[in-house]
Amino acid sequence: MKHKVLMSFVLIILLVPLTGCWNRRELNELAIAVAMGIDKSGEQYQVSAQIVNPGEIVTQKGGGTNSPIVTLTSTGDSMMEAVRKMTIKSPRKIYFAHLRLFVIGEELAREEGIAKTLDLISRDPEFRTDFFIIVAKETTAEQVLKIFSIPLEKIPANKMFESLETSQKVWAVTATQTLDELISDLVAAGTNPLLTGVEVTGDPARGEKRENIQKTSPQAILKINGMAAFYKDKLVGWLNEDESKGANFINDKVKSTVVTVQCPKKGNISVELIRSKTKVSGKVVNGRPEVDVTVRTEANVAEVQCGEVDLSKTQTIYDLETKTEQAIQSDIEAALNKAQKDYKSDIFGFGEAIHKADPAYWKKAKKDWKKEFVNLQANIKVDVKIRRIGTLSKSFLNELKE
Image 1 (tube, rainbow, N blue to C red):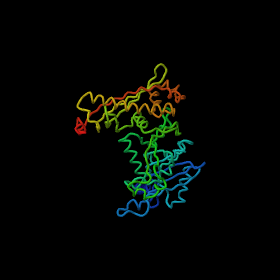
Image 2: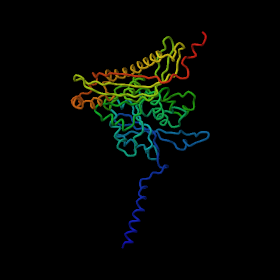
Image 3: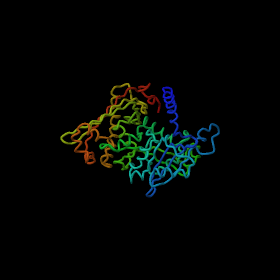
Image 4: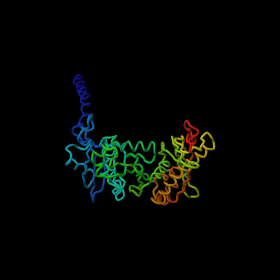
């Protein structure tokens, strides 16, 4: 009897690992999507998927004759219906576990909002949450996914994913927003979302052809341009480059960037910010909400176009730090003005700061926070410390003869 019980136990143990393959998927049965787009087509949703052609990706010599990617589109009353209808055009099931990019058309974002479109990708376990979400500026998500944009990358979605990461790290006019971060901003009472915008420049029709990336000057490219400001889940407007950088300073998303200031006479000095930290604290003064925005940065002198500037002098460094602080503050004020006066949307999370500082006040103010935000006083302080001036204290330009 004991022997039978032992054997039964051993068999059960051996069978457990075998159940791990019940939902296996063979690669040759899947169409791997690296990007997904959503637009509105009348009363229906139009879903686009950028599918990888594995045979062309692994081609080592001479290059294949087929496209490394194909973009499929389908419409339906819901996103799930549209996705399933894609099988009419594809012999394989569309597989979204390797998604890198989710693109939302501007028309959909403005008119209907983005909340409904996020339900499927947040509910379906096949979707991971580490892909970036962007808005197609003045175009459709489908058009963005069809463009072959740059010769350095066979898969456009991968190129855009890497461009977003790089731009945020070194230029600070974009913000890489994942699904979890976006949903958190949508459901929070004291903040509204900011998403990076991408536009098609040039001839879109030529950009859809593979020959576009075989030229030294492509006929059409994808360009990151501005940030989309939302009120709740609807797009209300765009921030330009300076305003986007200012918003990123407030939101503590600046890792590195370049600030250009004018020389005393002629030319410019480029200051490279190497570190930046922003602290936002809320308070209630005489019954009115206020926020203190403190930005502290460290920088190096990267380029000097004026020969008369002597960086070995303490006063010169002080003046340069002051001008850099003023330039950063100008960007921050531009972002604040656009958000408060034009869009009336708290894209900085100031409401959350007030909530932390004074929960009792926030309980009363949160229902009408839009009105409170418009009149909110923001006290901005920027502190820049220049650490290095490079190998030259004086530019050789002053030694050049006229």
